[in-house]
Length: 122
Image (cartoon, rainbow, N blue to C red; front, side, top):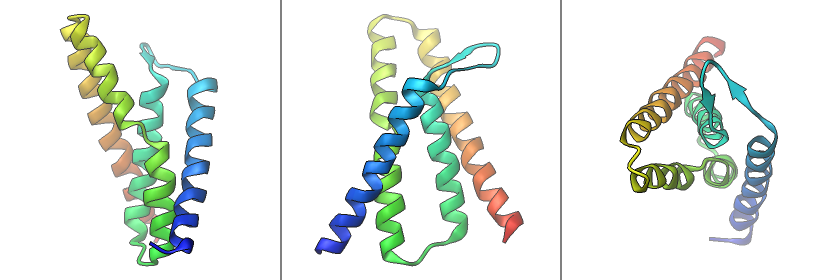
């Protein structure tokens, strides 16, 4: 990797981290049940991923900046796995089951919405 590629990944990851921390510390959504902030971040990241895939980017610098840098630091897959592990340890199997499907299904819907919106706009 050259210095340009490293700089793009660092720049994208810095903004991804700042955006994630902002959402995790400031955003609360309650739609009949409480959605954890980590889940919200994953939903937004999935939406952005759908948009980026629909744009069919071929510029390697943009891929490094957005896919690897921004989305790599913005999304919180490891936090999602940790939350599942904690629920498993506490033997809260129903919460684990619903949280797993909540994140997977809603993330996929958000991804598809981003992708579909870009298909309409193109």
